Length: 178
Image 1 (cartoon, rainbow, N blue to C red):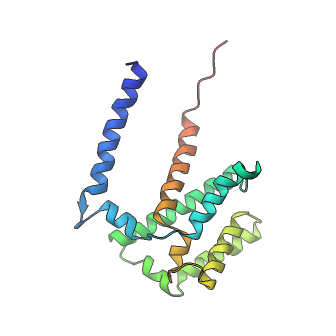
Image 2 (cartoon, rainbow, N blue to C red):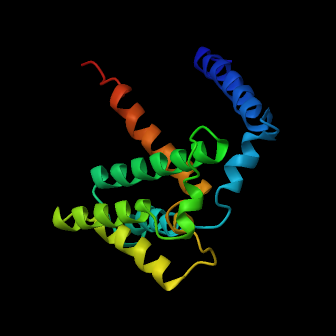
Image 3 (cartoon, rainbow, N blue to C red):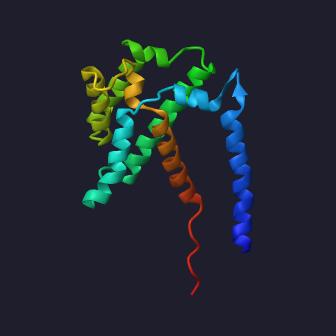
């Protein structure tokens, strides 16, 4: 075996063991997988938008969002999901997810953020308008506003994209010496 293969295997085994431990070890009676999947088991508008953003360049040859906007969208998804997950796990005394079932200050904050994005002429404004319109039209079976914005698959995809972009800043391929 080459040294690069052995080194990469040494890094992958502890990561896999840690992931399995964190996924199945019960915290306060339930495993992380249970909490992770119970926040929103359905497909959200955010997931559909994420997939459209990723697949559109393959179909048309043009990107729907600039890389910076896609990174901001992904960061929003990660922060939103982690906030809801922290609330579900009890790390935050307020149940943020329950606020999505009726009009709350969080809905007003998303509406204000949408107006700000429209004012700044950000392409992300269209995504936020889509969240609000889909919720108002009840296009998904859920009555919770957060189920329209995020789900566990969107969190995984967004976290992967944010991690990829972050790591690419620090680990650039070495240029061949001449």
